[in-house]
Amino acid sequence: MWRLLGCTKVLTSSDVWFLGKCYKVSPEESSSDTDSESGHAAFLEDFSSRIWITYRKGFDAISDSKLTSDVNWGCMVRSSQMLVAQALVFHHLGRSWRKPSEKPYKPEYMRVLHLFGDSEACVFSIHNLLQAGKSYGLAAGSWVGPYAMCRAWQTLIRTNRGQADAVDGKENFPMALYVVSGDEDGERGGAPVVCIGVAAQLCSDFNKGQSTWSPILLLVPLVLGLDKINPRYIPLLKETFTFSQSLGILGGRPGTSTYIAGVQDERALYLDPHEVQMAVNIAPDNLEADTSSYHCSVVRDLALDQIDPSLAIGFYCRDKDDFDDFCSRASELVVKANGAPLFTVVQSIESSKQIYNQDVGLGCSGSSMANDDDPDGFGKAGEEEWQIL
Image 1 (cartoon, rainbow, N blue to C red):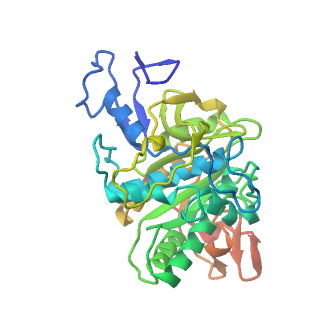
Image 2: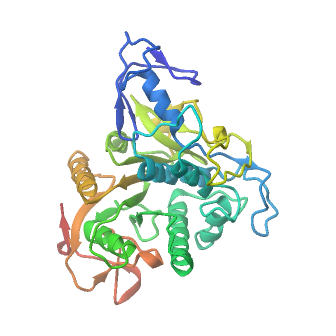
Image 3: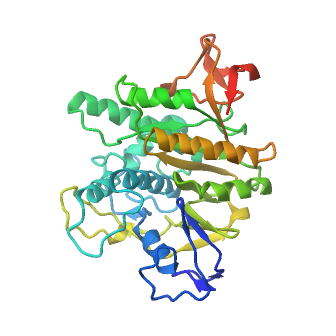
């Protein structure tokens, strides 16, 4: 048995899967074995190196709301910032990066933190996310669900990319973004479908028409039950943490969002955004800045069957080989799903009438496709039009 720092529960010596990495902890392991790549200390070092983003107070007012804090309403925004921040850290610094104990820090690390500062000047701030998500119901002082949050990111990144092209060509988000939709409104069920052809097109668009593959972030909003999560999905959710591309889950208890980054047995391990901290300004060129408020050593947990059924899963694929590996793992997971997969993977859409328009927020799903005669994207696609992997 071993105790996670900050946890009130004693967890078992079972394997911990944390963002695609397995930590094996034996009962005989010495807690002082800090060189172990697979033990308690190694897991805690990994956990405390992840970017932790929480409620803040004392920042400039959000738009016309006069609110200078997101306490009691901004947890979904903060959880989503954590997931996207991990994608950027994995991209710029690699999965094996750990926060060093000594300064100066790497410029890439400081630039990532700066992006998530609490002002309009910081690209991925709560201010800019709320502005981008207005049409999806995001507003200062109001809670929002995972599907709308994913769409807000889609809008913000697209807008920022256009502005960067117009100004100096500098890219704050160095990867394509694919929000994988299920049903037409993303909230009434229907297993989302990852379309390889769509991913390729998004990468091509990111590369300004070149056919080369780019890094890509996939956000998969899901609804896995009504009032509570359907138990048949829990083993599938657990297995997504074994994917090397795993970025965890945007979700938590009903009405209380967290960033779930790992699992052990039937418990989810998460970073909690509900701690209130003062707003800070991390300048991207200040390699000596105090970054302690962006890291947490307290591992909290909750039962997997207590997770809100409305959630979103994230995956980061560095290149084409990594994306192919993700698709292979996802297809194997479909086989284990007994007819109720989290999501499926298809190669292409065979009908020339079917189109995909990421810019207007249309997704690729087995029951909801856009076509020339159905500009709202709610037309039905026949089964013969999908080439299932």
